[in-house]
Image (cartoon, rainbow, N blue to C red; front, side, top):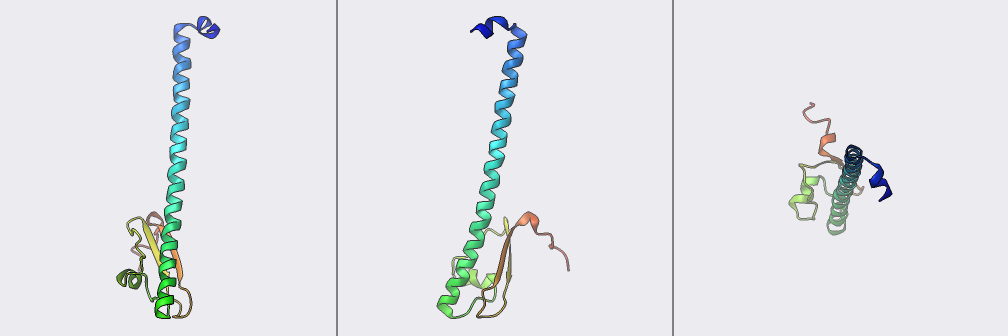
Length: 114
């Protein structure tokens, strides 16, 4: 109350404006932090999904699948949104775990390169 009496009308408006800007900046910062965390979790879940499906295929068929498409077509539960993620599936041999890399689609730099 003492502060209110001492500040003029213009000064009060400036203090209020600064406080509102600080709250807005904090809100924007937290929103960006949350979005980044959700994105990295989605990437991890997509990679786990493909790896789990490859292991399930190995357990049921006795060999690792030759491609990511094989996992999708044969119902092993590897459903990754390919508009968001790029799946690099490198088949090594039927008895070796494939090299599986999942990247955000925006990082797919090799697209269109022959």
